[in-house]
Length: 79
Image 1 (tube, one colour):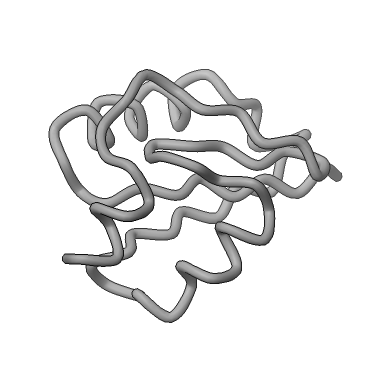
Image 2 (cartoon, one colour):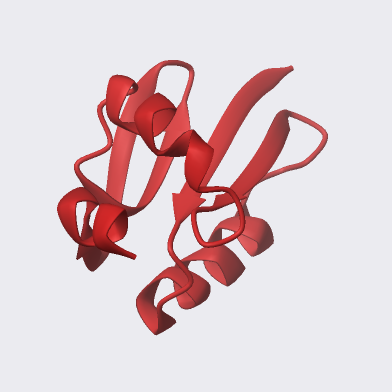
């Protein structure tokens, strides 16, 4: 099973993207983890190390995919 992590900051763009990802990824093939930075800011460094430059973003099999544009990681760090 593939591992995927969806990172977001809770903004409207991120929430819409989360709904889309949950609807379209096949949970029989993908183990999806949702990381909301307002709930777990300790994961910001992990996301940056994975190549996340803005949110929402999906990391799937080590590849980072930026979805639309909600906020830069610098904005996320500011809270």
